[in-house]
Picture 1 (cartoon, rainbow, N blue to C red):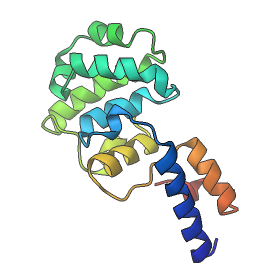
Picture 2 (cartoon, rainbow, N blue to C red; picture 1 turned 180 degrees about the vertical axis):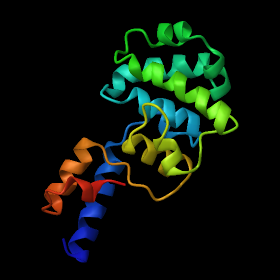
Picture 3 (cartoon, helix red, strand yellow; picture 1 turned 120 degrees about the vertical axis):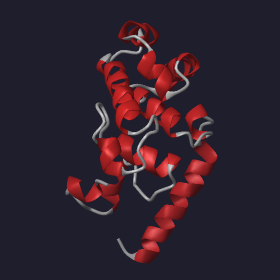
Length: 161
């Protein structure tokens, strides 16, 4: 795609977002922990389903320390009904690693976030770009499909962070 055409596409996408964006709690914070929780909950789950769980989860476990200290049963009870329980188990495991290896703070390096249980390239990129204001493209399946079509590319690896 030529530079002028890319600029037009970018402006069109930004205009569309300006008109259609949703007011979501994880878009009003730069807290790495809150963003990590939201992105994990949003894996394979619709936004409308995540919203009440996100709020309850952050009330119960507002910090990595609280999540680490909670029992697995407490975490799973709050997660009950959201599905894909392995995500909750991975959050608990990752909280333990963050407390032990990163002084209770999500690491500020992509590879270290990616190494946490349950974190894939999209979640790591979302935390890096939203919480730490680093230039990492957080491309979900839908965004990658649009970009492949826009750039006439079938190479999936070209669209990875």
